Length: 334
Image 1 (cartoon, rainbow, N blue to C red):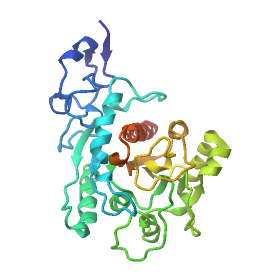
Image 2 (tube, rainbow, N blue to C red):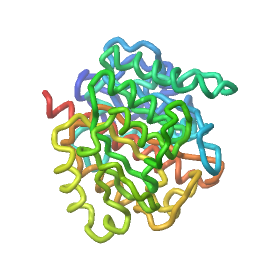
Image 3 (tube, rainbow, N blue to C red):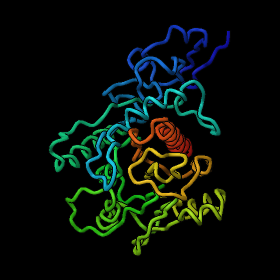
Image 4 (cartoon, rainbow, N blue to C red):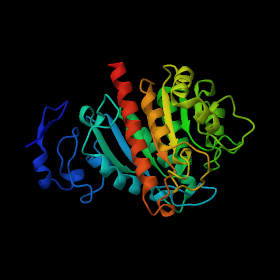
């Protein structure tokens, strides 16, 4: 009978006991270690992590933001967190492929549930989300957020900037989201990084946008590797360029699923052709190991527009890769 040993706790788990595992999200006692619960059954927390609001002893909290009131085209990303959690159950049995780190065994990672907000009072949403993330950061815990539309990154950045100061932003996206908008209270998923630059939340000189393929005349000083350049230069050259820009600056990583070509991620609100393949995205994220990532998110997964579930699967993979990026940064600091 095959056995697995948890890298940090030392606990040994028999794969044969998987037939007895169910609802790990509620029944597991250890915050570390893989899960062998059947992918098609049980409570669907992200990667079968423990569902809890207790941040004691936690290293990273995965949290959902079921918000899509800021979209310019198709709503539906409010259902993204639930779909990504479900899709993540396909990855819980093995350490993440292609990485020398296994954060789910070495770090205490939980599913912190979703942010609570009044869906009928949109103006109150940003403060609610900022407070939610601030509560995580105040406990010296990092966050990985599942959206929701891309506006959610703005209140998250506000919380992170209060803790760390101006951040580098590494943004994977079809759109720059830096279109001019000087109404700082306006809620729009296409203008929030304009506001983030203007408010000093991010340092544009040390920030990079990857996969862009829509026109915006003023990038506000943010470095851009657009999709055509990405295809031409290849992932290795792109990784080196990105690392050279970010340096060792504290970096927030945001991944809009529409960075991927609609062939790989059709379930999103504003799809644009000519995007990255899932293989390119995987190579980029793995190649970026070593950046000083302090938090991140994956956004714009809209399940109603993809009955195959492929977009949610992509979102779950991106989320795992981002957690690996974060974990590699922690090992670099150790």
